Length: 151
Image (cartoon, rainbow, N blue to C red; front, side):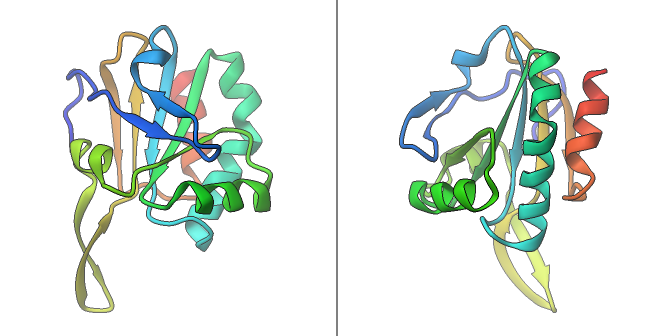
C-alpha cells in the first residue's frame, strides 16, 4: 500500500462513458479513490450503491468519489445503468493505476492463491497527497465510513 503523506500517483483512465480522467483534474477537492475487484458482484455492488446513495453528501463536502476496477468501459456502463450509480467508475484493464496504488496482490480463496485487486480506499487531499489508507475494507460499510472521515 502507498503511505500516508506521499503524493498520490496521477493516472489517465477512461470512465464508464469513455471520457478520460486524471487525478490532477481534481486538485482542490478531496478524492475518495476506491479500488474494487469486479463489477456486478455482491460486495462490489453494495459498495457502489452505498457511494451512489451518499454521493450528494460527498458533493456537499466538496469531495469526489472515483471507483476503479480492471473491468472494461462497457462493463462499467452496464454496472452504472443496472444500479443507477451517480458517480464516476474508472476502467483500468492494463492494471496501470491498480499496480501504482499497490492494490494488485495475492489473494487466497478457498485455499487457492490468485492475483487480484484487494479492496482498498484512499482518501486524497486537495493537493493530491494521500491523507488516509483503508485496507481490506468492508464493502457495505466503506461509503458511510468515508463520509464520516470527511466530517
